[in-house]
Image (cartoon, rainbow, N blue to C red):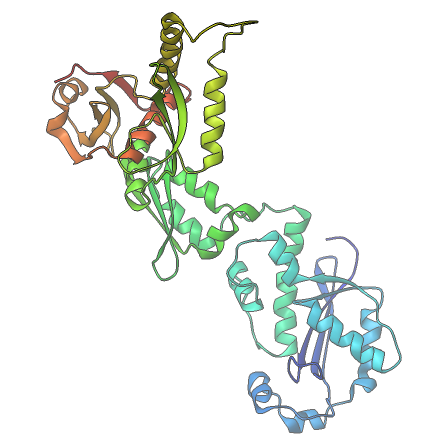
Length: 425
């Protein structure tokens, strides 16, 4: 803590309306890591106090009528504030109310401020609430005499010390909210499907993860970009799949892939093949599928750029059969890149347990299904249909996800899966 002196303030008032008046104030002077003085006093508001405020604060009208007026304690308050940093939980309320009261006396109050509410929002993004009670629970601060100036000032003082250390970076940054940390510790480091649910148990986010624990930590680390999940996620559940690809399949069951545009191969009257963007219709067989028209057009431009056009100074007549054949071969070669490397293949990878293996089976250019077995890999490859636990029938999302996964396998640093071609049964 630096040698600067801080004064932690809490004010109880007649309400939140524009004409509010002070009924109690507490000032705690804090310097060099310790409290050096405590000042508190009731203040006669010279106006009525509602029953609600009396019940909330336990301050009676009789006590207030016997209390000093603000102008009688103003100098004592100013003496403790001037030259120090004003600290409160919501300075927009406490500091501005004090400035207003001094202005009524013809005096100006100008202080540097430290708002524990605003600093908490900056240092710990993602909390459901930043009121004093919530933050004290977060830091394990015990609160006594809530809604009395001295009790709230003492709680704010303890909160200020916690936040000050965070701001100085002398203590580790808060990485995870406590209830999230408990959930994360229960997750497996295997591949699987993460389900994030709100306080009512409603599913708000699904995530297929190579490592469920690691991915949950990435999504729930206290960062601005994670704010939506930090605010809404109450519990996290993990469904172990062993294979990250099967986790993707499980996610597709909740959120099916629905494209709007395709790039397919067409043929003109001369027999020349070319790529074309078309709207997607259910059941259409295409090379590439897209949700956005812009992405489909971008892919078409990229494909056309890979087929060099022959340039002629002068040309008489249509393309020759040889030219058309050459163009068609180039189109077909590019289209093959969007297919499975083999119409019949199997991807064998890790299972849900140490002894178990997972596999994904492709037949006739489509994913037939997936399954698990503790048999040897040779046995699984020899009779894969025997061990299928789920089957698909030309499931577009599953097919596209599997093709992408196979392309990415060669670039993965941690390869848990591998594919091989199968003889057609």
